[in-house]
Amino acid sequence: MRSFHPSDVVRAAEAPLLASLPEGTLMRRASYGLARVVASELRERTGGIAGRRVSLLVGSGDNGGDALWAGTFLRHRGVSVTALLLDPDRAHPAGLRALRKAGGRIVQATPEHVGDPDLVLDGIVGISGRGPLRPAAAAVVDEITAPIIAVDIPSGVDPDSGAVDGPAITAAVTVTFGAYKPVHALAAARCGRVELVDIGLTLPEAGLVAAEPSEIGAIWPVPGAEDDKYSQGVVGIRAGSARYPGAGVLCTGAAVAATSGMVRYAGSGASEVLARFPEVVVSPSVAETGRVQAWVVGPGAGTDDEACANLRDILATDLPVLVDADGLTLLAREPGLVRGRSAPTLLTPHAGEFARLTGQRPEPDRVAAVRSFAADWGVHVLLKGRATLVARPDGHVFVNDAGGSWASTAGAGDVLAGVIGSLLSSGMPVDLAAAAGARAHALAANLAAQDPDSPGAAPVSASAILSRIGDSIRLLRTHIAES
Image 1 (tube, one colour):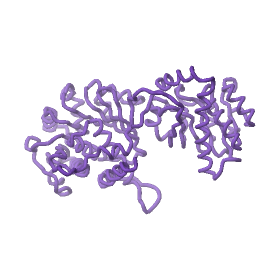
Image 2 (cartoon, helix red, strand yellow; image 1 turned 120 degrees about the vertical axis):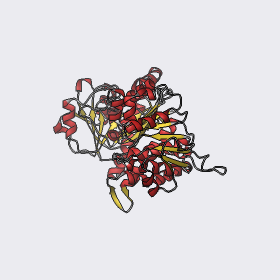
Image 3 (cartoon, helix red, strand yellow; image 1 turned 90 degrees about the horizontal axis):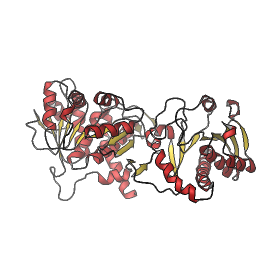
């Protein structure tokens, strides 16, 4: 698992090292790693290191010091370095002296001094900074056309929530020290590629983690020598309606694609489902469905009295249940249907549904919001977004950065629900099923957007995402041998 530690935890882990090491040692250790990444980027982007031009955006305090020391190490490799000081009176003294001694150029940070560097280091603020870039810094950043390498975090982006409420850096690469921070997962589009420099921190177990592809591939259920269609999990799908028949087709089809078990469908869209997926066993009602190991209820299923009765009956079982879409609308009216339920329960809202369920939107701190919701209701919650969050009632959170927003299309959530429901029926724990399903779903969307015969990508539909679920699982499982 990749762990993400909030800023206060990182600062606490740094404290004993700062106390035990000679002054400046930890900063130089971090800056040397930063300079190494910058040099590699210069070589990759320009074909060399010596004679290339790097500008440093230097704020006050240690983050600016990191940039100044990195600039010093780069000067020793023949790089032309210019430090743009945003607050000259508060620039890191030792770093400033070192860069001057190495022959670096030091100027006031103004738009006129930006010039035409090959790379820019963002050392404006670090993990103690909050809020957007100040006007003077924003004016300088607006003039930059070169790729930016952020020092620890992109300035102007909240290190713990990833929130942006004004001007902020968008980096091509972020070099972080000692630990990944929540921002690196929650605002991945702002961070670019993230490189971790080990500075020797001892960290506690993290409450925010991301599963690696090899870990998802390793736990994905595949048939063993003694398996049959029942032992691999039977999932019940209550989705679709006369108004939204496609939701039933997409959700059921995704469950078929996700595992080798069995899918039972209960609802009015049986003919549409069978036309696309004849392997599905259909029935006219929940009561007549037969034995299942988990339920998915809600996508396109309606919000009338019959739909509410179906939801109530399904939640009254002792089986794992995933509630999505229309089912969440019903729960917003009658939260008592799920609160206090002892069997595993997963709610999968987008931001608008989250607001209907809780009375407030999850922004700006989505992690805190989803943790609070899961704890208050005693359920697992999957909050959709480019950074999908899966919270357990005990506060542990999985995060999955989709790597893009190709899944932002009508019906994609129906596909996600079907994939996760099938994993739940296999006996996988709720949080792992949700995290694995989110990862496979995002990868399928990215695969659908790409054309192997031409560069670039194009928008996709939910049907296209569904068609690539198998390819996504196959690709995730190839990482097992590589890990």
